[in-house]
Length: 350
Image (cartoon, helix red, strand yellow):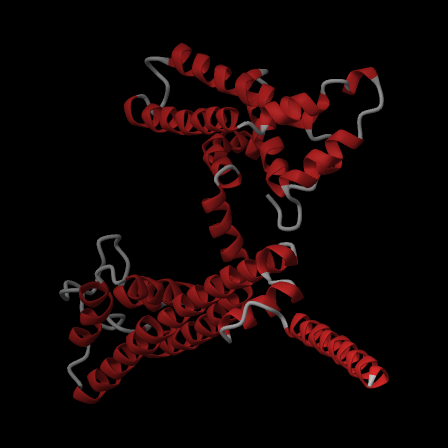
């Protein structure tokens, strides 16, 4: 649920915004849909649908053997999610419903399911829309509070991560430019049959791996992933040139690239992401504490006085002590007046 829109506010909006017979059961439907058992049922449907998609890709990827079964299951989930969306739409219409971004994603996924249900032929690239069925599992992020909190933290950490990622991308691009200048001509002048000259794809090594900016950039990305980077991307460069000076330059190039980009900058990106997520969690926690009523998280002035009195060994506040002292002084003054009156009577008798 989006920050700033609570379930109580949505329920209050739902109770205010029904004015005709069609919306008579709006509040009841809203409470029914947000009941714990209903939410667990919807989550179970989402997980079941994703499990079926995985099983179908495993045992019948092309739907050659059990196509009616898969279509029947797909139609069932499409109808179930359509009903779920209509119930949610009716119970939270309209501002509470459209104030939650996850509902837009639900509408998009259900729309894809309706296309599947109607057997609508989609021309050209639009046929790829059918592949978006697998994204239904992302609806769990809007249902489970812990997952929703993680997504919110990542969203708040994205600006800092993007800055660190841009720095890393600039450094990688600089190395890609240098790699084209240094290694693009390797093995070009070598005699046919030279070991390592031709790759398994029938291209000259230097041209395939470092022949252009885009190829060098992808090769450096492969080095960052750690996938066969030494054997495939680096050692052929050392073998291609017998000159010790060129090999030293190549070694410095690749070692510095790995240390700067893979060891330092990648960890900087991760550190910025973790710091942003931690800061987002702390900010949300502080905002939730500020939103609580003051009488629940702070002592009133009288309670604070009582607490200080208990700490000081007294059971009365300073005001009560002053009032008690004032009463004692008044009692003493009254006693003195009585004594003075008695002494005056005795003096008169004498």
